[in-house]
Image (cartoon, rainbow, N blue to C red; front, top):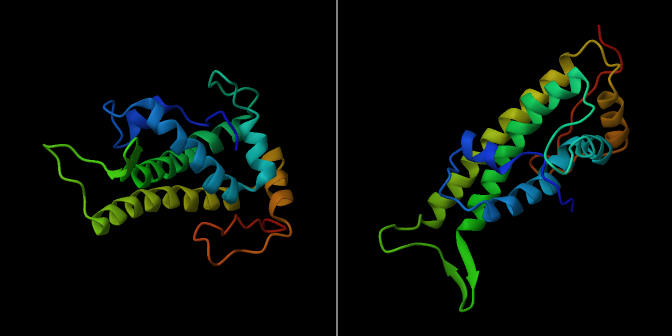
Length: 179
C-alpha cells in the first residue's frame, strides 16, 4: 500500500459530509485504503502509479499536463473523496479499544441500525461511482489521445478480464480508432 494520499484530508472535510469534527488521523487510513482497493483497480496499476508519482510528499501535484490536471481535478479527486468517505463510514461503525470491539456512540447520540448504516455507505459509493462513470465518458470522448495517460491505461488493462464479483471492476473502454 502506498503511504501518500492523492487527496488532502482538508479537501475531504471541506467538500463532503466529513466536517472538521472528525480527527484527521481517523480519515487518512480511509483515503489510503480507498486508493489501494478502489482507485488502483479502476485505473490499472500503470496509470495509478503514474498519477501517484506526480503527487509530492507535501501534497502538491508536479509535472502534470493540462489533460492530466483535468483528469486529476475533475475525476480522480471527487471519486476518491467519496470512496474514502464510504470507507470511513464503514470503519466508523465500530471501534477497537482496550476492552475489545465496541459500537461507537455517545450518551447524546444513537448509532444507526446496521441496515441504515449500509444504506449510508452505499450512498457514498454511488457518488464515487458517478464520478467514475463520468471519467469513463471523458476518456472515451477525447479525440486527442497523445497524452501519456491514455497509453498507460491501455497498457494496464490490455489483458484484464472484468471481475463480475467486483462492482467497480469495469475499466475504461478505449476504441481503437476515434471516428
